[in-house]
Image 1 (cartoon, rainbow, N blue to C red):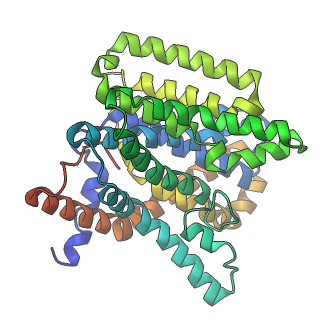
Image 2 (image 1 turned 30 degrees about the horizontal axis):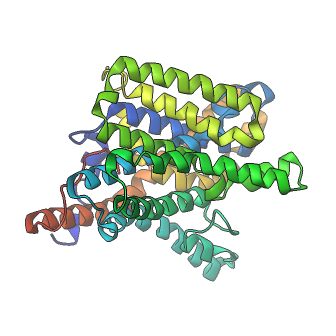
Image 3 (image 1 turned 60 degrees about the vertical axis):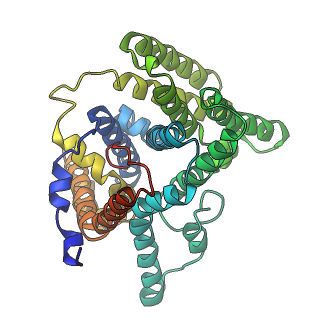
Length: 381
């Protein structure tokens, strides 16, 4: 494979679904990025009080929790299948495979900040926490980097924990790991609440970023993946829909009865229920719409770019927005969303796709030489 070959095929990949792609997950990933984008757009473009009550704006901040559920499910599926096949996890290979998907674009944004610091005098304070994926605990510069740090920590903790557990516990009993991981953040928040003199608003801020107080979505996704691999009978439509309904109701009860303590627990249950239910749906024309796959495929780039893109677009469109009413607001929204997609498509072509090609070539070579198990087809991961 020569250098130019690395850049060929990106457009086709963005439009053509791979074998084994699950359309329902594309819809959910599109919803997740739409929620995140909408929440930040409303803050940047002065959303009206009426529009702010719309679900996409009011619950925009919860989009990250849906991303967590999807990540736990898709990554968990890889890990549990490898345990089922081989009895252990090749952690180095897993991290490298993940890294070739996540690191190139992420460190590309870090490099951009470094260039701005050198050329334009931008502060680089806190950039070290972004580079080390600990920005969910320390001051950082990458917009949304805290959630990527949380996921990166999950990519390390999950395979290591599963590998250690595999020495002593049979896979059919390993549900204990995601179950414990689901309960521990609420326990940590309860401990904080009982010993802290901070008010509720400050406590909410403290709970939002750290892995140990905000990671239930990853845990419930990991549990779903375990069920799918080791209890395929749980995939039957009617029991799954009943379970999803009970989870949704439980999540709503927790959300409205104890938001400070159970906020993220409730969101994990609600979005977990939505994911569990969505996987029972037949692939209809609406679910199979290619736009969902395109947005899903670009969601990582959109997540990273919209933090810096929205303020710049507000500088260009803000005056127009302020002179108009709601129609202009929605026009600005559409322009900004399409701009984020376009920029994500560009970075996909120039940064993400070449490294995905390298990863694909490496995996193909490893399979030929018998050094790694066959990769699971799970969509965009």
